[in-house]
Length: 111
Image 1 (cartoon, rainbow, N blue to C red):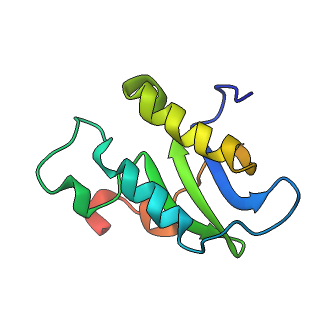
Image 2 (cartoon, rainbow, N blue to C red; image 1 turned 180 degrees about the vertical axis):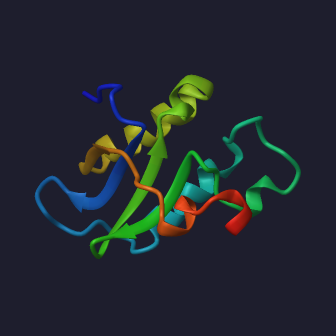
């Protein structure tokens, strides 16, 4: 069960048995399907970029999808889809808080 203390969940491309999940582009595929679910709803062309609520990345050499908890309140069926994808494929899910990059720490005028 996932609690609500963190802002993000990391669906990792590693099964609970420790095997690498395949296909290798699974994270991009999942995030692509979720691209229409975003703050303010789908907009024209939203399928051309990832939703800020569901972003593929690689952390420590492991493919992951970062799922933001705001999706749970705004789009509960999309949230359930992501959580069911992880459960159905026996993927590891870790609660965490993504730290901002050094560039994000600069004052807005310096960006």
